[in-house]
Image 1 (cartoon, helix red, strand yellow):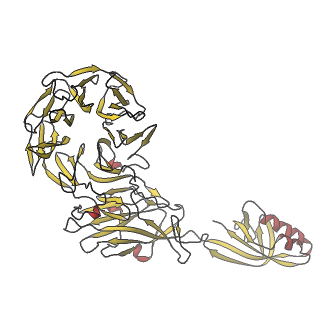
Image 2 (tube, rainbow, N blue to C red; image 1 turned 135 degrees about the vertical axis):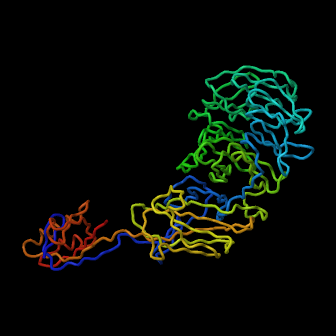
Image 3 (cartoon, rainbow, N blue to C red; image 1 turned 135 degrees about the horizontal axis):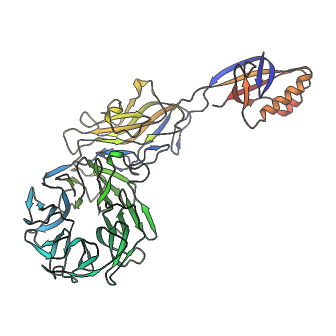
Length: 586
């Protein structure tokens, strides 16, 4: 009987072959490790505050791929998103929204093409001669009154009581801001800065405002807002243009380009100075500017948004510790929120209709606060508490009827075949009304089509639930993605809560072979055989091997894992058997 090892043929007296698994399985998740008391591993999903936009992960990241109608901003709690209410048909697509006092009560005003209304329990007409195609609005205060001012690049109208309107200026102001207690505006040609007297907004009522000219390497202006220079802290006027961010020094009447650049697009149309940070819409994302540093703040970072939800940043607002923005212009428009210091972007609401403006009204006006937004020609709102971001602590908070959470693709050693065993979770407030249904999809994380997913058993009990894959026999996969569908019953203040999700799986690589055989070291060839075995053992690459003795019949590539030591081999002086163990490594 013969074998071939490292291109050398040997006589053997016997050989045994075994099939073995090349890797030792163990349960591990991130930095937490347990002993090998079970033959499977577990991957935990728990904290989703890191935000959306990550398609795959190897270790827990605190991220997810996409959500629609799910609240993801509290560690250890996944709930339904907010209930969306419709404040009646508005008639046209809203362009601007402001809170302004009417008859002693603060009301929310919504402004659209030739329409200006405010909300009580229904829509009340505010201005019968509302401007066509309004471009900007703001609430301003001078030494005598507070005003709501609206412009459209041709006229400027204003009111001090919400019902009586007049022309503020004949100047063709298109965008406005307040600076040094003055109303500031830029004309529709983007070359003239208009301004009122200090602390006297309507000093030029019905006439032209004072002005000065500016110039720069831009052709379009999309926003004007007050802020501070980040290097010196001095107040300035920021101007968003098609070539980047510009700053205007009112006192020297000069304009200069800042360091913020972005690809040319007229949809880079909004900016704000808020909580000492400068936020600039840059088309598909937001640049967050601090002294000496510009951070690309998403949502177009990492793997970005699903194709059907991509668009441009149209509006943004800061409230409490949140930055909210709406993204429009794609197949679906969306509202997103992000904590200013913790985590990433989270979806609030999406629609196939246009969402191009948003506005926040505090809890002093509406219970639990209210985030308003245009949705096509309707005006809608959700609750947005300003006392806590943990909605599970607000007993009167209203949840939407259902929502979906798309986890990141599980991609631990993707090339190795694995078997998915079960999806388990620790949950709260589940019953026959509040239900969670898990789904999975193999090797295709980007699909948002419901029919592409395989449904698992519903979760209806608490505190521990589990669903096995493929009726318990397991599902073979390389990569796998899970989706959770949450739904509530008829009570709007109830929501199922998912606190932790564990995916059990078994790495199942192809088995490999190992051989144990006894080489005959006999006669005057004993030293030659010993030298050949030592050479094979010390080889820095794999050795070719044939258990049949002929590599034309079979050829494997192996490493020697066991044989006598060099001293023992070199001491051989008579015929004997040398036991050698070799194994494939993949």
